[in-house]
Length: 386
Image (cartoon, rainbow, N blue to C red; front, side, top):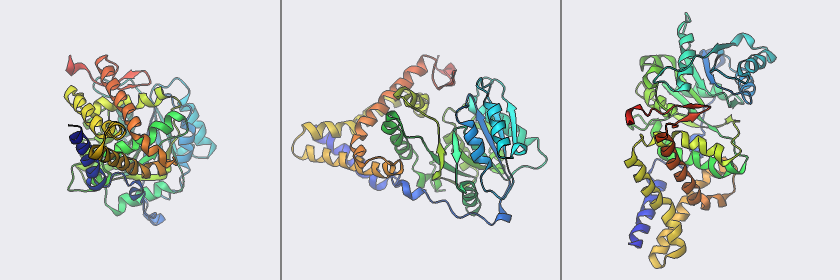
């Protein structure tokens, strides 16, 4: 029996490393192309939903409006009932770099039933664009904690134009400074890539679709023809829902760039765990059966190899050790991207156990009516489960 468990774990890692879209080779997807000629750069309107983002909104606005982009770039900030002066700080940041005329601030309204807070804020920003006489070629949906550097926006647009894409999205490099961040954040990206292999996202013959909500460049006509934000109004994992929506209208791309960074601090395990728990059960479609299946699968793939490598014998031990080594090797590109030591790879089973606990907590919070909690709002819909 123990040999069978070890064999299943080893087979799983052979498949994941060798046949699962090369998901773990992070450097493959850091491949933005050179900018277009200046006269060929289309108009962009960026929409930023912001709720109590005083710590980061100034850096976000300055970095975005300072991008060396030859086309017209403007920003709509939807201030989602902030109580910390977010809107005033954004206006001051734009004025400080002489770009006040390219920033529009909207006072957000309370989300109606059936809408998550972020998507309702985006809806209000996109509605303002619809009022314009001329629509932009692209809308950039970005978060208030994202800071841009270099000429990344020009290169992202070139990627979209050259590939005639409905969407091009960049997975922001998350802050990784506190011990909690160093322990949990690289694995967050690793697990995301495992769920949504970026190479499969880009393939038109695959149904796999995803995006990164921190930096999502959408072709305006594709978004409009797909039904707009209204089509995904209640989605808690809004970025992946948006990726699927836009992939229905054309090819999409998801990748990395060190020039797109999140400055949101998660100093404690509660901070990072809250981010994980907010959407983990939604990822499982709020299904108790899928939750049980996930617990069993993670035990077989991540936990059993360590236990059997330390306590087993003979072929069982060797298979378990092979699994542990394979997962450590697969984790290396993500660790390098986050400038973490290679030995962190052998801690992946322990990190996976933490993620499993946060996933269980996500289900618990959902059934308490506190699912999808974000800045005072419980956004997961429980009504269909009562």
